[in-house]
Length: 161
Image 1 (cartoon, rainbow, N blue to C red):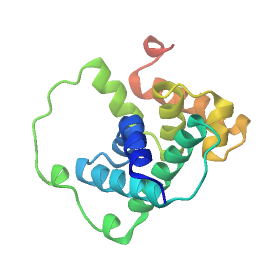
Image 2: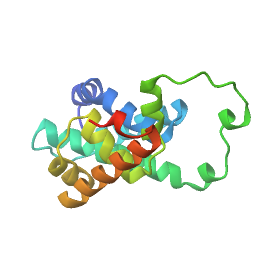
Image 3: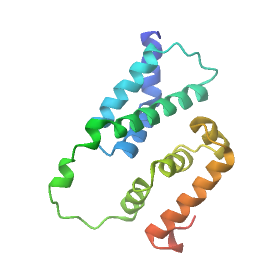
Image 4: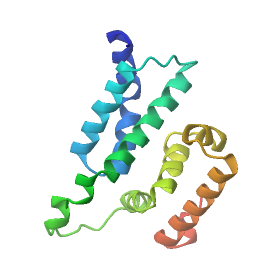
């Protein structure tokens, strides 16, 4: 079990990363807050000793991704409908950033994870491979395929980068 100071430091340091990962997967503030609390509770109760801050961060990312996936696979989650889906709201024309974000969020989970870790968190393919437990070449393939999917969804060459 970790000390209160250790847990407070981790929450302060990694809160944004954990919340963003949850929102990318869950697209729901309430579920994000639940997973956020569960992740840091697991951290507080964990006896894992970390080699570095990068190791600690990677551990938190892995626990967050797994918790989000577990929630999405749960029986309750698969049998409910979001209130947003029920209510019809007139859609405002999306800005370019919103359009890109929506395109990223519409990717399958395995692509979403690598895109987020690479473009938003700045991890390299070998680092992503270690975090997600995937072969480096698999990570490169997932990044390439995700870029192709995004290019198709966003309308071609104007979004290349």
